[in-house]
Image 1: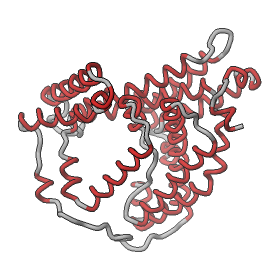
Image 2: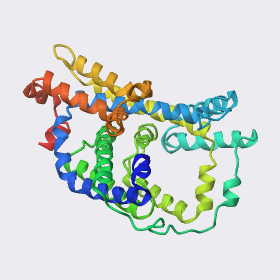
Image 3: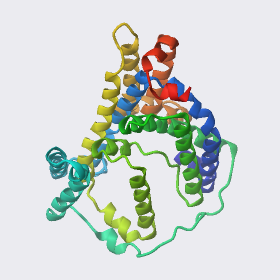
Image 4: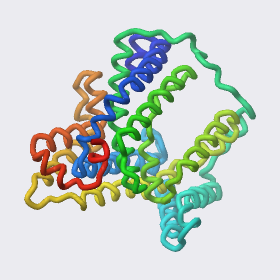
Length: 353
């Protein structure tokens, strides 16, 4: 988006966002048919990559949120994150049922109280925020549409669709409800429709957020009604900025502490899926080894693709996309399709067929 803005201007960004959202909705039925290329070895590799690729975000939050800040990595931030991790783990391990499911929320609350007691929580933005506010559509002018920005943004949405596929498969495994072609198509349409609305209301593309996969794994809350209620709360936070500012006042090291646990649970979900894959007498081991390695390259050393073109870099910077493509291609090339289908069992591939 920065690249589009520098070259074409802000109105072209929002035009490209709206158009790319529409194209995503149109492509949803086509891309949902690719589900048959995701046998367990690909699903397990992809979920594992998702969990690992989230760790830099947890590290940034744990350090203070801004790597360029002078106090980033301050021992006080690290200790606050450690305290949050400890509280979350104690609640999760010692309590069952409702209280155990609230371990992340309780960890956030206790961590914020500790931060407030130590003077590490600031509520300046709460007093500055308005009581009520509406977001005006097209506040920066009417969106403009041009082929090149739309093409670039559509490429970004294709990367998002790959990440959404991984999240849907992971959540399907966590909830015990296999991802079907219809489920995946609906998720793509949701991404596209929300992106179109975002462009109209001066915002940017949306997708199924990977961090939520870890939250489901940790909290064991699997109800769609809970997700819908959370969406309603988000709308209220948008309408009442003071409420949103209050939530935003949670210190980033506290978020980092909870993220370590949540993102780790996503990785565990991938490992559990891989444990069901037959490695002996197959080429699945090399598929997992190469795809996971390729998937973590952008995370482990971001400067690796610094000298490629900006459009290509858009794709190469997504480890989830790279890992997914690598796992799919290697599985097609190295595994016999009939044998692969026989070892899948009652999985999403059969449901898609």
